[in-house]
Image 1: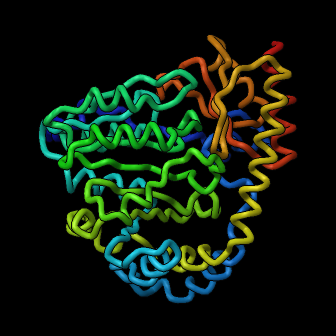
Image 2: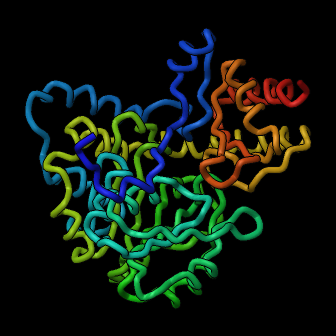
Length: 365
């Protein structure tokens, strides 16, 4: 081929999301399929957001507000920030891309865990920067000490996914404070807190507090996809010092967040009842699965999210495929450097019981 893609693409392995339900039905001829692979909200959509989206459909013939003013203002007021400290994107992934475009040059270095969100790798390579990967600490936790040791004069971004995907574990406030002392001012710390609403540990660090203190080399990312049930419309948001966000506004697409998503985000922030319902039911489901996994003799990571990392062993892919034939989609973790594990999203009560029954069958055959 005469056309030459830019050389950063040579090191990229495309991100492969969890199998869609429709694909499993087509490939395997299974009619009743449940998806426990992508950490979606099994309890549906925020009712208030649903009403707002339906109303917003009446005006989709008009381009959305390119600055996303109303939803940014709503987020700012909800969390106690100024408008210019808030950015939104077409999912948090969009903000990760904007961060990479805004802050990475050829040869810069980025630090992340070997077992964390693979989108970090893709956007780093796309900017022809170098990804430095660190191993997990005991307990399937991010090793902030290893990350601190990996920092060099070329480090531009450090990704701390907290709680971490796919392990579901957190770094503690004490570990985090120690790590901050090793972080140079010219390295941007990206705190990816997509699952923060589900954390009830008193040891969870206050990332937003760093932004409120005026620290310029920290950005905190969150999303409406999980606890509010809005994964399908793609709406992520971030908090940082206004000077830190300014470069992102230069590279973002003109209409990155559609008008339906903007309306949904504003309404979802007011739906405290749905958010608390989701958190409570997720906690119940997590405790149920813990007990059943112990009964099956399976090791798992203590999760602070709506998914559990489960150690299956060398048969992990075989078990994952057997679950597929039973109409249950879970996530293999070879791409996260965890080949013997499956990541299983927490579903409704009925879905969790069906999962355990099928998992027991798959392990016995």
